[in-house]
Length: 367
Ligand code: SF4
Image (cartoon, rainbow, N blue to C red; front, side, top):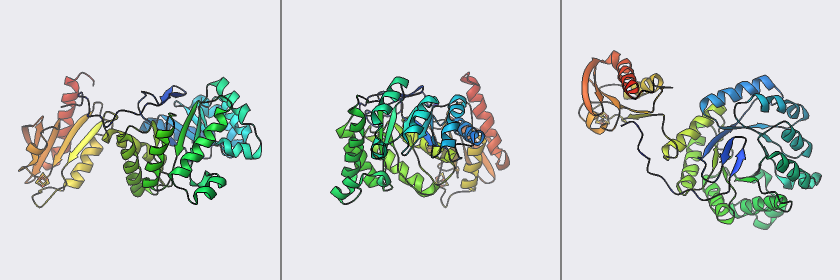
């Protein structure tokens, strides 16, 4: 039926401390949140706000913007004020942009203190400013940002090197009494990435931001992220996720939400249960499944909708669906909760499924 039962939970969440990114809690018992990053020049306030609005509509809960120049830093107050979701400023080296981001009302900053220390040791001042403003900081380690000393020690960017680097970065803040931290240890290889986060989760209780870096174009990146996040979240590791794709950021959000839904960590909005088709199929299952998915986009209640390619196995296999169709001979048998209620011509299958689904939604009183 409609998903009100508790999903089988993957694993108990690993206990982490909680930080607040604006009004979004990350870590502790907070649900795993989905984040993404804008690809517009941050200094272009309107374009950036427009993209943030699209991400928000797609379900993004936290958004990160890059701050590579003073013009970008100057845009932060307006972006932070007008965004409906918390904004994190991503800063590489310059302490002055960190202070600007905190003053601008950003909900978080991503910066590695190791970089700051090399140029101008203002880590203590940053810790104080962030602490006064209640702004958490994410330390983000990846192959590109690994300390040279550690690269020399380990010879390559493996899990140990990533974790040691991250914990060293944390210590630079801890020595100033600042612990409002989140950590990521990203890698492009899911196996290395999973091992790194496992190790990190044994060594500290900071909330963890999961990511596979440079995961690639949408298809490959989706697979890499789903496998890596799945392996970790299944063990209760991970407090917030960012899928990185060489694709529009809204796609990252959809994939991230899909991963959480697949793991039962978030209620599904719509699940289309469609058969893979086989030699018995009497309809083009792929196109029918796609048309059904499109017709149900944004449906007001979570539903499981079945699309089966033949009447032999259809209704039986899709018994758990709220509504569904078994197609054959130019017709579709429409079933609701496992009972065939009517047969319609193939051209009316999609609209009939939507009509029946609306009826279910009305019965639930959540129209
Ligand atoms: Fe084949 Fe019918 Fe099963 Fe689809 S529902 S996979 S067409 S047997």
